Image (cartoon, rainbow, N blue to C red; front, side):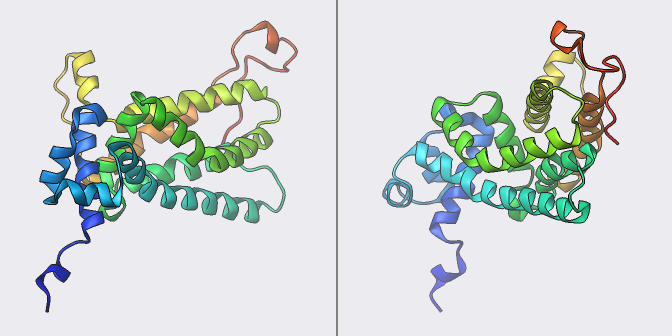
Length: 238
C-alpha cells in the first residue's frame, strides 16, 4: 500500500497547522514559512490549495463555522418546532447560540480549544478582511437568532437587545481567547486549564450563567426607555 495514503490529506494538514499557528501567534505573527514547516509541505502546496495567507485564514474558519452555523440553526429549528409558534425562552436561545459554540471546545475533531482560542483571538483583534468574512458567514444565523430574541422579549426595546447581544459576543470572544490577559490584568496566578475538553466545560459553566445574568439585567435609565413599563425590573429570561 502507498505509504502516503496513511498520512492526513495535504490540505487538511495545512489547515490544521495554520489553525494552531494562527492561534498561537496571530495572523500577522504567523508566516507562510512557519505554516509550511509545521505542515511539512512546500510553499507551492499552500499556494495550490489556498492561493494566499488571507484565503488560508478564511478557509481555516470556514471549515469550522460551516458546522457551527448548521448546528446553531438546527438547534433553533428544533426549539421553534417544539414551541409551536410560541416565543422561545431567552435562556434556550442563548444555549442554542453560545452553548453550541462552547461545546466545540470539547471535541478535537471540531478544532477543540485550539479553534475556540483562535476564534476569540481573531474576534478581539480582527483584520479588516476578516471582519467582512465573518459578517458574511454569520449573516443568516445572526438574523435568525436576532428575530428569536425580539419575539422572546417583546417588552424590551430592540435596540437594547442588539446592545446586549453585542456585549455577550464580546464577553464570549474575550473568554475563549484564553486567560493570558486575565492573569496580566489581575496580577494573579490563576490555576486555569486552557486546553482540552475539561477546559471547555469549565468555561461553559462560568460563561453561560454570566450571559443570562446580563440578559436579565434591568433596563438602563435612558430617556428613550421612559415609556417602558417596569423599566427598573429584571427582564424575565428564565
